[in-house]
Image (cartoon, rainbow, N blue to C red; front, side, top):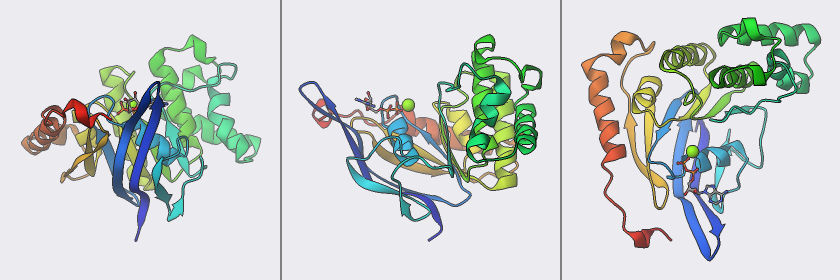
Length: 261
Ligand code: ADP
Ligand code: MG
């Protein structure tokens, strides 16, 4: 099988005072090599938990995640993770942050600089390459975190609401850039968002999850051609799929309180 990421009956329980909470209930999902999957669902439905398990940052309580057929046992350089909260080293400049992973990968100084500058340009931070994160806006910090993740050229990108802090225009630009690099380099991407339009615009398939307990609800294929364009975004075909996803997210049958154990 050429499944790049495979969730197999993955559950995660968190201990709480006086009990435990089932954050993710038997998630099974296969993401194909080169596929772009987006994940949407109500707050608390286990999206981040699922992504963090694939990233090797959270252990499943039961079940397993396979990447390239191998059991995930921790983080790895083939999986780049981008969080909603920009995670930068505050004492390093933008360029040093972007070069960080390249240093670990033992790239030479010239190559590091070349690669870093390429991705700094890509996210539009060339004028701020020597700036410290604290002098940047939230959106700029996030673009720096994105450049840092892209720079190490992972075959898989795990992105947890990466564009949530960006203004609307920058967000659309970042979506198009992401699609361009994805189609050029054929990465496999799992991308969480709470924005239904964004989910449809980017994806081959939209994974809709439900809460209490967090679980797979529906998978909606997006049969729209790439490259995705403004024309596609504004088309009736797009609207049909968006409405279907919207309905799946916002009109899920209410769960009973008993299910929340
Ligand atoms: P989502 O990303 O879909 O909003 P999360 O995966 O962050 O949801 O969380 C799913 C549920 O698990 C939430 O109710 C959250 O409060 C709970 N949860 C997540 N991480 C922890 C943790 N480390 N300890 C306890 N509860 C957690
Ligand atoms: Mg989350």
